[in-house]
Length: 313
Image 1 (cartoon, helix red, strand yellow):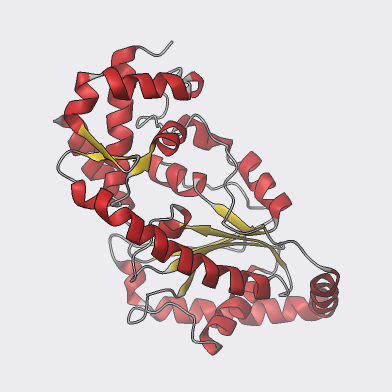
Image 2 (cartoon, rainbow, N blue to C red):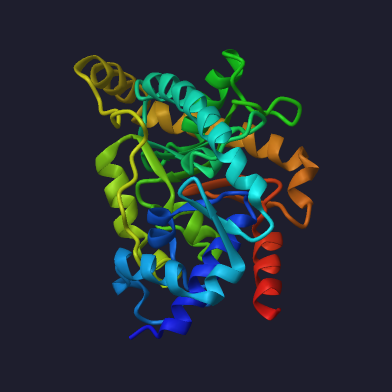
């Protein structure tokens, strides 16, 4: 049973976490995202009702001394500008969702792709003009390198690939996993929040499988899984997209595809080895046949360190 004083601390801690991303929370979001910073320190978070949360927000002097509320959103005291800016960021997110929708609709024709999801600031409808569009990709096993080369190559050809110089509204394909590698192996409070917000754009069934393979998130975010959807229907295959996809997979699915996969792997590993950014202390780079992760400037260490400093105060 969660004690009232514990709930107050959890509410403030959750808002502190999202403040690190300049993201105020609605009451409903705050209720969903209530977290366990130390993975199991508090029991009973999952059973907290929305009404209990609302009562605590209204009656707790501790909460009121730490948080401010406006426009139906909650932020830390002294962070009024986040509340004022949220409408503008929400409008920017709507524009980037439209762009994401366009490209997700195209990418569903590509062979071996089983799911495309959006993460990061756009998944929280908190995008700035300079924000990119983070895409999480699930593909068929033994075709991860080919899939990455195809999707990144198309993004480059269309001028939509995110680079260091061009980030605003560009596609950032920073994480690929295969169907036999759906469980995220790097399990922290940071990744729990990150993947709990994953919004499917294509491949609803695979999205559900991903959630079931990552129930470890409940250790940090006990109300997971919930079902987030973009501001448009989740794409599935049409007769035409299925025909195109299956035809390409028939060609590239056998021994010839194995050769192409190995060539794609060698080319990309060579390029990755030459990129010295992967050696930075904040970089998180994984290159296996089941997972490709490229977070060259990961915010994880800084985020968790700052949150811990809040706790110590």
